[in-house]
Each structure stands twice: as structure tokens, then as C-alpha cells.
Length: 531
Picture 1 (cartoon, rainbow, N blue to C red):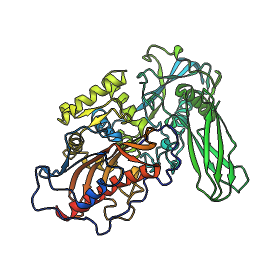
Picture 2 (picture 1 turned 180 degrees about the horizontal axis):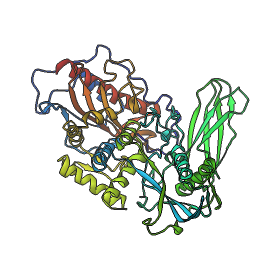
Picture 3 (picture 1 turned 60 degrees about the vertical axis):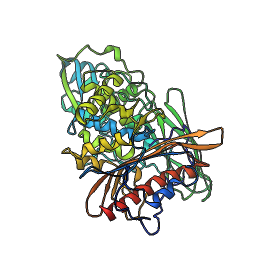
Picture 4 (picture 1 turned 180 degrees about the vertical axis):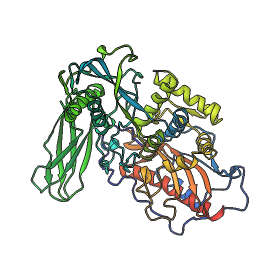
């Protein structure tokens, strides 16, 4: 979920605000027989759809019992809607199939040159493979860590928190392997080889080497009123420097932080105020040159491991010194990622935009292409047409994450993606990769006490803009697509989207998000009562 507004929506005080359960549960029993478009929607759902702000909005709904194909509810199911981050259902379903759930990215390091005892007379080349995390989120059990509000959303949404894992863990492991290979000194340079694919013109832009999502984390913690706030930042790699001028103000005062950076991104300043007694506030600043950053990070890690490098540790990545191939060079280290299913779970749980865009490049590479658009969308088209047997005309897409209001999907197409999974060996793994209402991921904060908690598995989508003509917010899309688990264990496929809703302020935008979760909860209760 990522608003299209570039500025921070700091007045979004409680992300995914606590869901208000409608008194009395489902407002109306389903009729005895369905009409041409399934049963009428429950009165509680209709009441939500007719609230202020939806006067000119378009609602799309499709709910299907996959056990027999019965259409339970349908409204404009074959019309195109802006899907927002529900685009990720197409992207990640395609990548899961194309790469395989057990696929692991192996990032090798080659010693290019001659060895003389413990000295390499030449260069170390880290050959980037498009690994999303490079070990920076890997937990002790090997799984991938995430929080409900990811650090990648810290500049847009409050409540973002850091995972405890070391963002440089994979780089450190590589450095230790180099030392274990017998190398103690590199009389040459360290080079990142990024030639596996050409970074596409997407936002956020996927790159072959990614460390900490190509971000510097900036965590500000209040102290006593009138005193400077504390700053923690990571990953600390030269020549990056961070300065904080943030002041702690009295409890209940205004928290307002601003991040600025030099053109190359290496000089970062955090300024503003933070209220005493408040929770730490996280912001992020972009790493402008991931290859140069990765090169320096590895040189510094080698130093910590006891391997010296003669080249200056900072500066541009000397890609021009790379060999044409590594056929005669010894591999002295390799970092192996968690399986792709864990990356898919991360992307779907927190709506990880960089990971979804990167999936296009990952698929392109598998197909032997360096062109993320041509190769990635060819893989998606092939998956839809020949694997899932879904008409690709149900979708119009131009990225992996769903960040463009010109992208479209039909409720039918999204439901067919969800239905496809139910006939695969990975059906349960995929369902559990979706945010769970009231439990985790993007919908984790919603519905903490309602009956549907833990029984709605759905990917939300959000696209927000500003209507300057009328001085209001416009919600180009708010959607939910996934599965309802009835109280007796029956799965139901559902899709709900609303396009062109309006809100007078950001709290009204939050209410639109809440409304879609209310609808999901009501549909789960209805399905439990009647299926």
C-alpha cells in the first residue's frame, strides 16, 4: 500500500485505524435463492457503500464459493477498476510460478587476478543477482522478518518500525567467507557487477544489488523536553553522515520531522521536533548509488573480517574494470538467500513496492533477458494465459507494485487469480502470505476484536491523490482481495474495490480503508452464517 502523494501524510495518526464492528453482526440474512448476480449484499454492506464520500464512487464486488463455483455476490465484476496494490497478486503469482517457491538467489564473489600466498593481486567482484534483502531481514530460523508497517513506508505512514536484524548481515557473511578462502589482502579493488539486468524506470527502482531496500533508516527517540532527541541510524557505511537537530518538546506537543539530503544522498539532516513521552519516529533517506554503497559496505566488512584492500573505500563503483566473464576465476564467497516463497510473503504482507517491481526483473532474468519490462511482462502474460488460464485482457498493468492510476483489473480477473491458487500444492502457503485481518501485515491493526479477526486473508490496495479543484482527497482505489475463512473452515474467494471515493481530510481517507475492512468482516460473518 503506497499513497501516490509524495509528501508525508503525518496526520494519518493511526494507520489502518481500529475497525469498528457493526452491532448485531450481519445486518440481513441472505435470501433463499440468488439472483442473476448472486444474492443481494447484506444491508450493512450497502449502508457502508452509501456513506458520504461515495456519492460518485464505483464499487466492484465478487464473492464466489470455490467448492461449487456459486456466485454469492457480484457487482460490476467484469468492469475494470484501478487495483492499486492488488496488482501484486498478479506480479507475485507470476513470480512464484516462474522462479519457483524454492528458488534461492546465490550472490557470488570472484577473485579476479593471481593469488600470491594470502594476497590477491587483482580485484574481488561481487556479482549481484537481484536478491531483495541480502540477508538483512533473515531471522535465526532462516525466515524473513517484517513488521506490520514496513520501514519502506516510514515517510508516508506513521507507526513504521525496524526489524531487529542487521541490514549488513549478508555482506558480513561474504566478507568472512573471503577470509576463510585464505585471502588476507587485496592488492586491487572491490567491484560490484550489476550487469544481470538493466534497472527499469520504475519508482521505487529495482537494482541488481539491494542493501536495506536502498534506504538509510533514521530513528528519532525523544528525551526530556528542551533537550536534543536521540538519533539512531543504519546501515552506517562511509561516506554517509547523518546530523540531527531535532529537539524534544513537551509531552503532547507537535512531532514534526523533516529529512533533507545532499544531491548524492550521503549527507543527511533530520530536523524538527518530537514530543516527550511519544514513541520513536522512523524516517528513511534514499541510497542514491546502490553499487557504490555496496562496494564500500563490502570493503568495510572485509576490514572487520581481517582482509585489507588497497583501493580507497569510497567513491564510484569501477564497473569498467570488470571482466567479460568469470570462467577462469575462483569463487571465494557466495551468499544464498532464503527461498523465494519467503520473499513473496514479505512483499504481500507489507505491500513491499520495491520487491514487487524487482519481481519483474527476477522473472526477466529467468527468461534470459536483461529487460525487466519485456522479460517480466512476458512471464506474466505466459503465466496468465498458459498456467492460470486467465484472459490477460482482464488486466492492464505497467509495473509490478500497482502504483499507477492508469492500471486496471476486473474483479473477475483478481478472483480468478485467487481461485487458481486453490488448485495448487502451495494454496495454503500463498493464503498465509496475505495480510491477515487483525493479525499481521497491512491489515494487522484493523479489527483486533471483531468476530472476523484471523479469518480474512486479503491483499489491500490503496491509491490516493488530491482533488485541487474541490479541495479534498480522492481515493482512486481502496480494495481488498483474498479469502474468507468461515467459522467451520470453508474458504470463500472475495474481491471488493472502490474507485473515486472522496474524503475531506486524511482521517476521511483512513475511514475509506476502514470501510473496506468492515465489508470484508461482514462478508466473512455472512458466509459463516449461511454456507
